[in-house]
Length: 632
Ligand code: GLA
Image: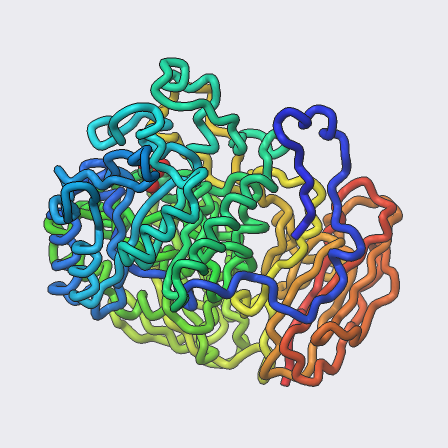
């Protein structure tokens, strides 16, 4: 991780001018895989959550009815397991004991004795149905409903102290209760209590809630206390390990892409939200999609990008909009997003259940290789996502973002298949089979996504390009000097605010991160005029960990990318196998032709790709691992 010694709010001004960069020690190889391996997320989680269906208006009957339909409709057999309660379940904290009290008016089975409440009867019922149970909390003292004033009816009651239902100051006690005593399997930890409870919150001003100096400033990374945010989430992770001796838990981070969470969330949790909330509008779905779609190298088994829960069934994804509903579902499946249904399943039609239960699409999401789809074609109008599956075949999604019909051409290059070999396609929505050689035209209906399984002759026989297997890569150091918002994300109207502002700004730090088949800033990979369709684009001062088992060689064409500054600085590429230097390039400057870097890895479990800068630049320097591949 970059050591972001970001200042607390008080010291922010004094430290604002300090440079941020990875020191030499942070680039030294470790021979280890440093992404989080705890919890239960070898595959993206699948299940149901109350929020998009009911918001705060939840009760036990609704939760159990959804669980029953998940069983009866075959969705459980298709893989949906978690039944998650979101905001709205809590009544208060007992200030004598610190124990959380459940709102028994809506969860009557929790009234287990006169003094205490327990979710154990509910989790027992869910477990007896073969399902798993999830709960919700906040890392601060207060929840999102309290912070932003929504859902007053089911917000906690009592004194300001009794209303402090979040984990803050109670991490160990609450996690022990939720997992050890109540038997939950999953927790979503929100971040509103450390974001919006400052002195300007009207309810803080009225004395209803205690003031908490915000640790997250959504619009300023410099004024966000990243180490403090990390530390709180790490404490929850430690408590989860402690109170789940069997390791059967799933830890969902929900700070919406803030606090540079992309670079560190994978060290502490299993899934991490990449954006603010989805809403049942097309533009908002695009926004959430974009927040995860260029982050393929930041997801691997155990750690997944979470662009938020599904809204299939509602608004622009309702029964009148089957193309939109199928697109939303297809894209989430291709991105290895958690498939968490957010619909009142009592209202679901057979057609809607068929979308959510499409086994072929689910198989893509649950493919054991864990490769998030990579963008093979990227515009504001049309995008092609390609996902390499465990058996070496591909899935491709052709996505029309626009409201007009779009003629498109899929080529063998998009799939990294040989142009002269036949490519067999199976349409995963219609089941129709076809084949082509070289290229194939399609017409996409408005908002349509066609998804195919594709089998052809690999352009790289035997080996695998690194950009085909993002699930085997962990970006341990990304070389970003100062985290910046991502300008590529569709700026949708925020429904809960509407147009009461002068517009939406780029958000979510992550711009300049490592990319598959693209430079870090979205340019074509290019070294001294030579273009690379395939490769890894990253900044200098970076270290990538690659799972190298099953292969014996690494090869790439390396050099400074043409998209960087003409600053006279030079970079050096190094390849390590299980911590030992296997090969390195010379120091290379801008416009020097790409050089081959090919080493025998000897089957090393962890291959590390390090690029060092010479420190003579004031700006981040993009570099290219062109055609980077692991070979037999
Ligand atoms: C935040 C989260 C949502 C939901 C609500 C509950 O907005 O991002 O997913 O959990 O809080 O209040």
